[in-house]
Length: 190
Image (cartoon, rainbow, N blue to C red; front, side, top):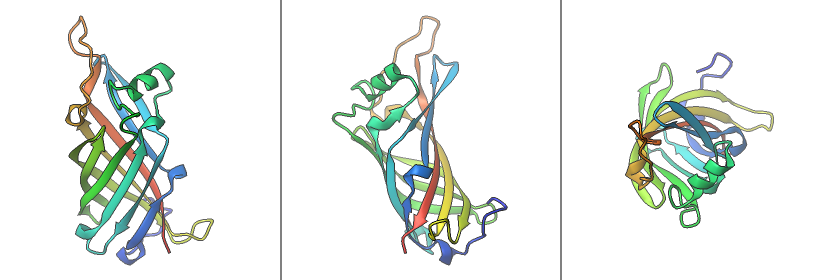
């Protein structure tokens, strides 16, 4: 937890929260030609979560608009929206539904968030390694605000994303592993 944030109790955090999309990010990385890392993001994300004092009963539901993908390259973005990858016309949303939370360390605010990720109509379990980043009891608009970060790595083939090209020098154009990083700011529903 950052030094400027208030150390909350579980009672401060317990309850329903809404993700502040304008202050949250969903980013990803993948290897291109096995040597360079390409970064991208999804610009439209919405969701909510509930923190229960018994973390095992906490829940979350997040929806990401597949068409909001951006890698700062219009041609690549169009390809990622196509049937070769996300097929956004038939599958306009990616969805994450939490199935459990485990506290790893209360001292440094780390946790594991388990859930099912649905991409292109295919669901698979994932685990996010998370960290509580901070809490303010009253932001500029008088709302309780908390921030979290989390990351994971998935195999895109688990979600039916199998398009690739073999390279003459060996290897493939796009890595199977995709890194996912989240920065989430949320306000508490009062």
